[in-house]
Length: 160
Image 1 (cartoon, helix red, strand yellow):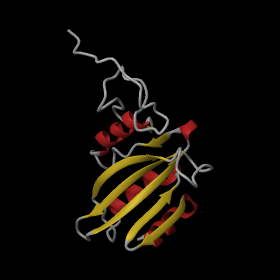
Image 2 (cartoon, rainbow, N blue to C red):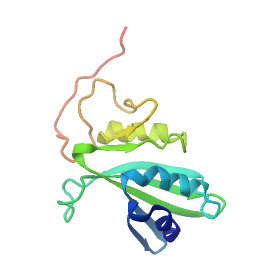
Image 3 (cartoon, one colour):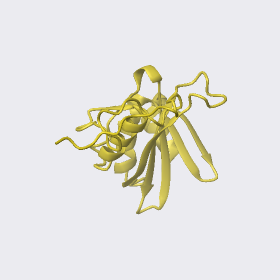
């Protein structure tokens, strides 16, 4: 499946690994929607379930000091073929934007909102990108590695 993805994406497929059946592809931001659509629609792949969409902050990760700060991670599953695939998109801190996958999987709406809320990564073209877990007045994104853990926010009650 990684070879097929490579043939489809060409230079937009940045890296792959297949260690112990754990299939992972690192895809450039410009190719992620095509990659996701191909994985979903190609009959031999048929990744018809977006299991999860999350992000990783590598700010203080040893060995990643020179690379992009974030990765957006998509976990796909194929019910008909019983196989899994992980797609990763490197995202720079100063341009933390990835195209939305809501047109491919409606569940991406909620998952992308969670990533926005916790990490501050925007999803271009998202129909309703607003906080999901925290209140709108909350400042910052608490799963970023530079978020101050001692920071306190006022409790906001319902508006009457």
